[in-house]
Image (cartoon, rainbow, N blue to C red; front, side, top):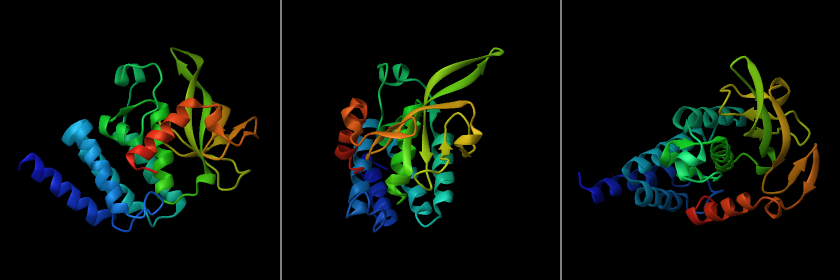
Length: 226
């Protein structure tokens, strides 16, 4: 099959899979996912397209599930398909926040990339953004008989604003309440609506303090995720 034919078949599948799905991304979901596939093919080739197509299929299959089941599906999807590597190995930069398209196409990412991909995908599945946060933590990891704290990021799901969040993590596969993760020490958390530190709202505009978040939101819009 020629390159153009292969692309046409993939795009046709996407139109069938996502027509009418995920209005949070676009009024025309099919066009949104056509655009994502076209970008993945242009930037990363057929392998990138296949990864995005698998993501679209997962999203389509999970759209009518309960929120708890969506958390499970999304967490498992990325933890099983993305290999951990640091940004220097992947992007040649010390700290780069990848979009889900980039993480899917590369099949590699660091903790921020896992967290961003899960956050954006859960939003796409209709989980209210107010229930989701990206959480910076210090993770106590045992190495050679000792423990050391390392900077880490996880996704948090808050059933209510004051609830004990459920933690979606690439280090631990099980989704557990924060109170059952004594290895994680929260530093601050954020989403589109605010930044929290010490359990208190510290800013209504996290983009003012987090330039990488501001840049990521811009690239998400460019790619069609928002």
